[in-house]
Image: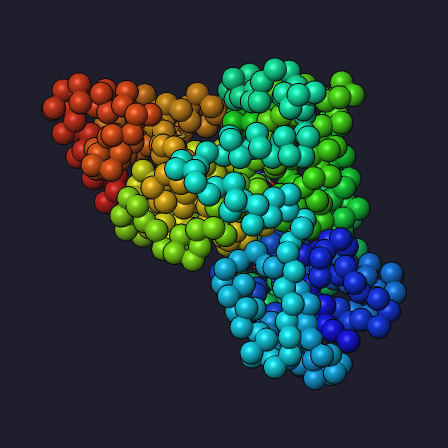
Length: 508
Ligand code: FAD
Ligand code: DLZ
Ligand code: SF4
């Protein structure tokens, strides 16, 4: 008899580690402090995972499976995964362990040594919930000098016949409809009201436990609203497909104060924990287009995020680790300012993005990328600290997806593997794509002076500071040409203002 280990983000009945479970098998699931505290996870993330784990255990038991479930407050809990596996082996007499490859290098490298540590064979199976295996990604990237997500995505579309016509051509004649997307918000733009799930006794018990044991972590559990079962996640997906997907493309990049979700799906935490499966979600969105229930720009844009970006970042993570985490191409060294933990700043865009994050353990992509991420890059914040923040504060955060997005996409810390140029933008971009600036203490039209939007001087100073590394990038040539044409007195005033902003980061 072997022990089948299921981790907190592996809550899928189709999981490879559960493939051959029968009435004689034992499944192990454990809530442990080592996983709950390797970063200071948001309370809602811990509560979501513990409640989803407990519900998944109930479902397995209802299917007749024997589950050894160790709760965090079990007095015998060793609070560490390998020790819990060891304890389970000795209690059950299991002759081996079966698990599915996990999502973080930190834990994967530990698990790789378990056979030796535990003295029984440990079989690690591929995670076939992902659409592209690591081996296939490795094959795809081999011999390519420049990696671009768009080409990977097209390959995935062809391979899995998604939105494809006869002859491997994309439906609608184009692979990508982004030119039709990314509209600024219209006045009064408001996303639909989202489902809120009833908290059952299991969830209530978890909320009490998390409040008690993780009181020093960020977050407010009073407003916990996550789906904690596959059925509940499915209900959210259904609402998204029916009511929200049609507008996804148009407002994908829009930002509105007090509207944390707008037309985003909010399914990342469910996908990443296994409550939803990516290919199922893609097929559902695809069907909505074929049935005339959503336009192609929205459906293609949404599918690209999952079939393209999500699979691509995972491939980058596993083919670049472990040294990827250490990279710091722009040699950014400044400490993360306190505002990232408190949301206290006069910059309305930052206060909104961080405030949403603190309240919901969620913030939509463009706020993560173009507000908090962009600010971190322009201010030269240390990528390791920034990455740790992103890993802690979002309910969907696991290193395989968080690190390439933060270090690579948002901070350009990998020197261009994830992004062909830094996603750097001034206050002008934020003003165009949001309604934040109207109510801000700062003015997005000013670059220097007391009221100047901090993003503006930082933007030019960032280009100037990093010119040796960035000026040759053809995609930045216009910006560098504008900077070089600028009056030297103005350049000097911008540099001075940027220095002042950087020296007063704790109070802006
Ligand atoms: P939607 O906008 O509705 O998109 C649909 C789905 O596409 C998402 O649920 C997600 O599964 C996938 N997706 C979209 N963009 C990406 C992307 N860039 N990378 C991978 N998948 C993507 N996503 C995470 O799941 N976990 C993270 O820890 C995470 N950290 C991020 C850090 C930074 C700095 C940035 C810029 C992005 C990060 N993302 C992360 C990607 C993206 O922001 C989130 O997936 C998205 O905001 C989740 O919200 P949603 O479900 O409403 O997404
Ligand atoms: C994120 C997380 C947390 C907070 N707690 C647990 C836990 O107690 N037990 C568990 O099995 N998994 C947990 N997880 C998810 C793991 O950290 C995740 O499996 C790894 O980071 C690999 O992705
Ligand atoms: Fe953000 Fe600048 Fe706009 Fe204020 S003015 S909301 S700091 S972009």
